[in-house]
Image 1 (cartoon, rainbow, N blue to C red):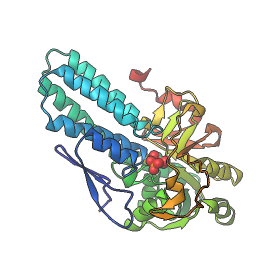
Image 2 (image 1 turned 30 degrees about the vertical axis):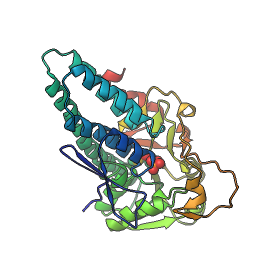
Image 3 (image 1 turned 90 degrees about the vertical axis):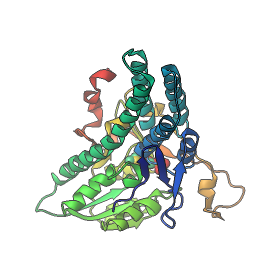
Length: 355
Ligand code: MRU
């Protein structure tokens, strides 16, 4: 059974508390937008697609369980609450794009006189439900395009060794995963020799979450510390690096978990192809270049403590950015649900309603 970060059924939302993994499996009952904001902000759920989905579903819980008599109040709720949810974590763009979609739909339904308030609410709920299903379909497509891309350079039917960073699997999405979806796809084709996953300090998404998913699914995985990447690339042939994205700028520069940038530099030096796997909802065409992407800074306690245990000298100052930006020049390709794109050519993905 695949791990389920998010469970939603008919107005009931539960989120797997990822701060307790891999030791304890406990779900949190999310009763509305206020709870949704908290679980996202505390990183009990994390990963750009999962953040967007939990935000939208926490709104769905309220829409499903409250009674509305006016279409104008439904429209106001959607706009106000989605804009509030975006503030829980500023770097991942998927929730902003989901918010824009829902607000646009709410405005359209509000203006349509043939639609009453009940129909308006059920249309919005249906749209959120579709986002959930689409995320899994997109991830499977990303997995297949990514596996094809990596295997096209492999001769003699050899197996591949890949490296990934942070967690981009079932726990970071509604299921299957993006970069980890590519790994899953390679494994299911029996083409994966080994996936190396970095520990991903300071929050340890690699050691706690990716390693957990790999063990859970019997995928051959090896954990390394973040400072072992150069040694790994020098001593063992790595066929590709595959990471996720929190926000891709229009010029292809990509914000992802802190440490991604240094891995990309090492990949360039060691001539290892470096791929970003992300759905089109991770691309922000409103941001022209990576230096304009807002980078979240997290509390220093996430660096100085492991659970309640202090591991850094008391009194030391800390800098704890949660993400960094990898320039497009270091990215071999962006693996999306519609194919692998050169980061410099993202414009071809702008859909007509975004132009
Ligand atoms: O801080 P996190 O754990 O939310 O960061 C997650 C990442 O950086 C992932 O690589 C990214 O969100 C893509 S998840 C499919």
